Image (cartoon, rainbow, N blue to C red; front, side, top):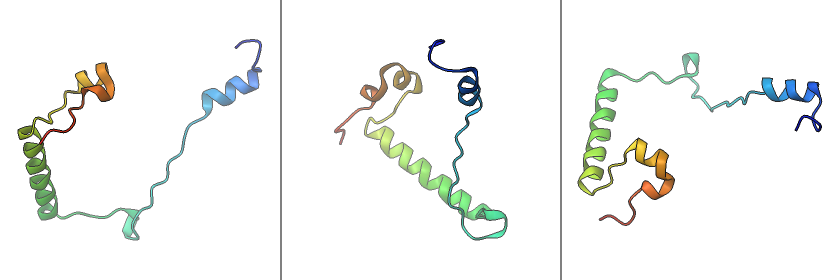
Length: 78
């Protein structure tokens, strides 16, 4: 690789940073403000979903996923 790229090209590679721009809602500051009640409802729904998935055997360990990739995810669990 040392014989292919110039120093300028190496510098471009090192300083290259992706820029992601998400579409924001048209509100003050570009962010939607959630109320405490909305956040509690979102949390409650997320916990119900997580418990339902765990009851079906769909619990995923991050370490297992990092070690085994997609094969760590259980499929066709009912």
